[in-house]
Structure formats: structure tokens, C-alpha cells
Amino acid sequence: MTHAQAKGKPSAPQGELEFTSHDLSREDAHGEEEPNIKVNVDVSKVKSFLMNVVKTTEIAELDLQMGDMELYVLRKVASSAAAAPPAPAPAAPAPAAAAAAPVAMSSLEEASEPSVDETIVFLQSETVGTFRRGRYAKGKKIGSKPCVEVGTQVKKGQTVAFVEQMGTYAPVLANQAGEVHEFLVQEGDPVGFGQDLVSLYPFFGGHIIGESKHV
Image (cartoon, rainbow, N blue to C red; front, side, top):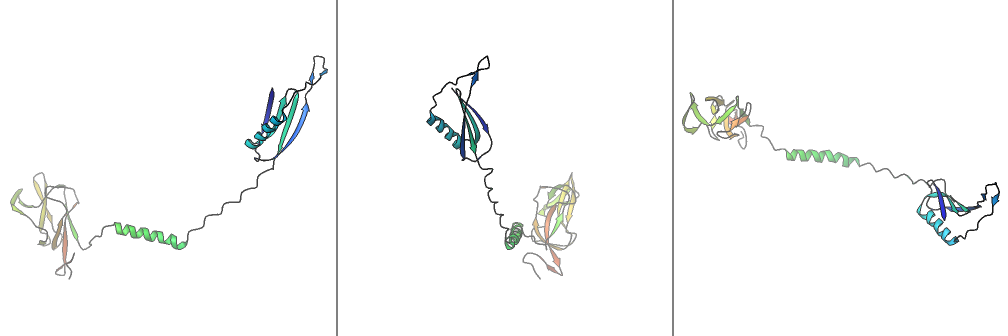
């Protein structure tokens, strides 16, 4: 029967082997040594076993006991493997490339934002209710036509629509003279306080300023 006792520590996969064998003597009850018992050892198998240990493990010391035969194996290895050279630091990006990124991002943001005609003015709701384009007087609708249409020229203070709230009608008044550009809500739509309802091209110096309407 073969008994192996291994002591492990980190080592390189290859190294030298140093073999030291000892004969183990046994003492009887009177303290006298008994003669060693000879054990037939297959040297080729022992060698194959040791080479397998060297190649597949990191065991540095090995103590084999085969009957009364002890085989102590010491694997001599280098103190430490050569340290790998540090990886080169990544190259810093070129300043021109770094500066180009914000410019490109700014261009994309500008392209995604819809253009706004700053010459247009908006008429807003001063209450909460339902949008009405018809004409009303004392809570009753007058006629079938709306107050104004797109393209109608209006004076400052002219009624362009109404906001109905519980049977009362609050007029939406033009805040300056101009031309009706667009209705931003439709007949019967609910509206909130401060919501844009109608847009106007304003008059300036006797002329309408806005889309294709220049002095």
C-alpha cells in the first residue's frame, strides 16, 4: 500500500526534483529495532507518478511512504516568475477630435429642435372651460359663422373666440392688431388656464410681419 503526504505552495509549472529516501525502522515492545521489510517498488510507476505531479500541480514537496520505504521529493523552483511588463497606457485622444464631439452634438440638438417663428404672437385662455369659435351674446349663440377665420385681419381688443364655462362665455381678445395665423385648439376642445388658443401675425408699422409677409 502506498501513502502520499503532500505539502503545497505556489510554484512555477516546471522545476527540478530532488529525491531523498529513508528507511523506516520499527521498534518492538522492548525498544529493539526490528529488521526492515523489503518492498518491491516499480520505479517506472513512481517516476511516472512524480512527473504527472510536476506537470499538473503546483506541489513543491511530496512525501511517499511505501511499506517501510519513505521517499521524500522536493521540487526546487524559482523564487518568483519574472514580472510581466506593465501594459502601455492608452494614448490620449487628439485635442481636435475631443473638440469636435461637442460641436457635432450641438449640431444634432439644433437640427432636432423645430424652428419657431418669433414674429408670431399667441392668444391665451384666461380661464378653464370649452373652446368655442362661434359668436355669443348674453349666453346665446348668434348666427352660424365663427368669430374669425384663418387669414382674418383683426384689431387690438377684437374677439376672436370664446371659452365657455358653466353657461358663461369669456371672450378671447386679440392682444394686438394682426392677422389670424392658426387655431391651436378646435371647437369643443377643453382648454386650461394660460393655454395657447390662437396665433396671430402682428401688424408692425402698418404691415403684417410673419411667414412670407414682410415689409
